[in-house]
Length: 340
Image 1 (cartoon, rainbow, N blue to C red):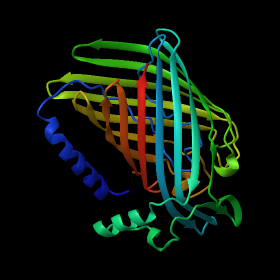
Image 2 (cartoon, helix red, strand yellow):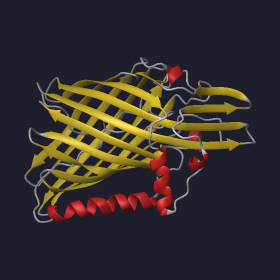
Image 3 (cartoon, rainbow, N blue to C red):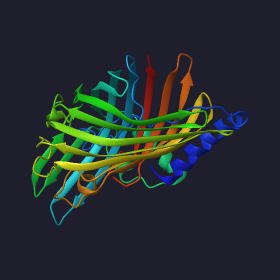
């Protein structure tokens, strides 16, 4: 993705703001339940949930998310003999459930299902780049709607998946502990500690998981201010991931990594909000000069949320690779959630 696409995206949302400016009401700003969909990142334990809000005792919070990513990147480094090609589309459906065990503690589970295929977005993205005079990065000369993920180093094939496939991803057990919460007519602030345990339930040969048991711990914070112009929100998180040796690029994998999110948002009305969110982490692999392998991933997600009757919240977002080639060049996110 490029800056031109970002400007076009915000122009579209600007049109939606015209009626919203006529009236302001309160809508809390919450993070996207999203993570980097790069095939070498999404299989790791970096959590999708960075909210500082803990489910109340006796209540259930449920979410269903869908992520569609289009990958195309080709890179070579002749000095080290590295050669990489990621070309294809990935689809990830995740069912998440949280239960308020006490007034301060929740437990939960994330169950993902993933699919890799040739997809259908190649022609659309090529035409989009042509329309705005944007660089294709080789996508226009590559085979259309192909599914191939390969990486060789020193003439040795270290990763190869050249067929479509789907299956259960790595299931994650979660818990959250409320550390601080303050709510008033002027706003709300909250801080929580979250921990996860990722189980190797996905097939690493098909990039449905990394074949490792991994745990994370993170500190999450959020702040909302209710003003005459609507809600202004700020949120963020920072944490560490510890993993045993996985099966994907095993000799290049790092067993310790840091991760974090940072986001801002504005809710002009009680039923709509707009937000930006940065997701980043330290490198998950080493031993290569290729950005796709050893550069710290950083992506930007932009979009917003809509509130429907029955307190259903729908997140809508699109992401781009702020750090080029460390995330898909385009990914779309939908997330429907509700507390019962």
